[in-house]
Length: 258
Image (spheres, rainbow, N blue to C red):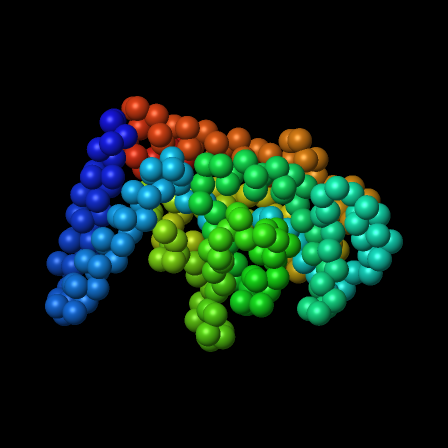
């Protein structure tokens, strides 16, 4: 397909889906107008991303990019890690947390940012999301404020679910990476499910897993062929296929074949 005509096709697909949903039950003129405005906004954002040959990548935090705990005492390991050019272990004293970044994180974010607009979406609260984003992106160059936390208003009675409403562009151009597929009930076709990262003992206990943690075994995933390295290869291939001449312009179909 000619890349110049892909935005038009995507808009037609979006109009069709939205039109079907509008006819499913009566809606007010005000709601129809709001849907039209949202439709137009998303198309503008999508065209901007396509002009830069970028898609959207939504990244979970806990057990996907990192592992956090309140229990471990790791002063010696943190001192050793602090001397490295790129750190992976952090103590956030103001939050009473230790956070361990997944091996390969820096290369993953750098390479992914060349192909995707990066978003964070966590079930953690806003202060936690902000703190983790600052660790991963101190200058704000990668995420650019695109950080979402579940129920920022603090209402914990609402079930833990995520969706793509806050993500720029259309769903057919958005890829998700998360260790918990069940929190994306409406976006399964967009999802790359990754293996959970359990560095700390408390993390394994939380999920009822037997055996020692990576910390207790004094080992870790390998940067060169660990989870983030293999995930990077997948999203690179999805991006290349999406922007190829013969693509039908839908990451969900590409993920289904991957």
